Image (cartoon, rainbow, N blue to C red; front, side):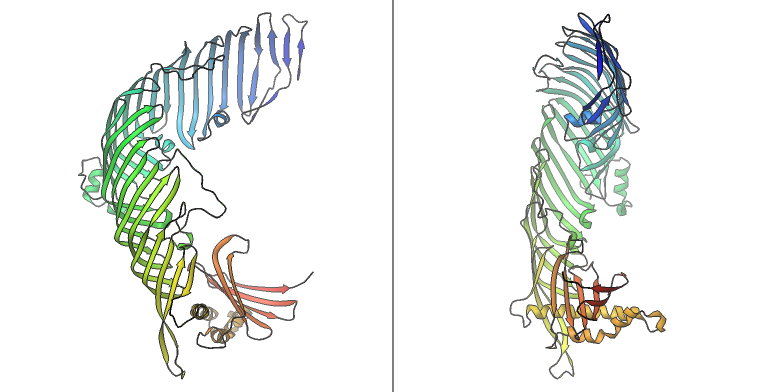
Length: 637
């Protein structure tokens, strides 16, 4: 809202209230905006805009022919809303303050500026303070100095760049004209690496860069040198960093030469190794030393932000530790990075030692039924052959087995595909407190974006039962076939087994309930009555009933209720739970529940029915959950 006074000399436009939604932010004025309207120009006499803590002031004139003579100044301007509007793949934030003098006209503007951005960050990586002193004239940006400085490093860029900032033409904004610039950098941490390589957490080390740029945007040329000494690189996927990194390279015209690259990948436990100490302090070490990665190659500049890669990287006895899947191992590696952006990472990884401790229930990190696969053409493609002739171990609460095999891991446009097979050499499988020896087993990887292989395990154990006369204990073979997938297994009795699938369930539950009852019985103790609750006594006194109910060698051990439920009480998908229950009298009901994971405890409950509408339930788990007592009411309406 405002007013226009045509009788005043000069006529004056006064805007009392202004609220504009700009770049998802609100811009407003506190004081009236005063604009004088002359015959040939308008003058911004008092023009201040605000947004949160930001302020932008403009003073000067603009003629009707588009000639400008403006002074702009700003303080505490948040740059994030502006960059979010134009750039979607990265989040750029910071606080800008500075000034700009704008002259020329809309067709050929000219300006000089001096500004700084504090707390400049890209994707939450704080880069420090960015100071710029620059001018623009005759379609060229003259960058007198642009310095990005933090506690770890200083980056400097200066030179001239062709740039079309005309308000009246749609010609190419980056004309293919000559560039003349120089870039220098030095410090002890390259904070820009995590910004452009998301898989890298940090890259520390003494580094120096001095490069002169020429050519054009389409055909850039560069000459100079760069080096890293005693560097440490931490990848997000690995717990142990690569240390003692040495990199030397140079640039000639449109080629970046990686003259030599070396680093050491070892665990912290191996720091007593003398060769590791030499590498840590920057002394030369041999490429044949255990854990040393070495590489070389070239990168060709194809254009602005476009590269063609031809790099090789190899190493022997490289140790790795990952937080995901709780994996550690030792591997020989040969990788090549080839092709234009995005390049292809290909090669092979020979595992000489591998150990995974992650439970099967949480192993898969791939797709869920309701999610969709999204392509990302900016992610580097990958094609790796991973092989192990032996010594590949899975050791968790559900299995302890050694495998061998080959797996091809590929990634195209951000979408993974895992193909291959692992065969069991030897080992054991643990199912509901029973230890099964694996006679034969395999894992077949054939899923896209889902590390959940098909499994086929033939396992066996020995179970104990009474003889026909009941006077002695006899043992018999109990063979199972475990199929399905790693996170959704299907368990059946083996072909030709003397036991049915119903017998299998009863036998497994019998063993689990016996173990559980012994735990519960020991928890009740043998002390005074004060130490035993009513629920403890109920559970203890019904132990005999349960053992009779679940004895696999008694014909009358019939289950009255059998339920398989993959969800918890809140309806969230969890590890599948199996529940069985039986009436041991018309009013007394026993229930036992167990999730298909050794990480989960068992639950044993007793429910007494006073009548059809009122019952009392007591239950206790084996994971220190305590005793639960509930009075239940049932109504039908």
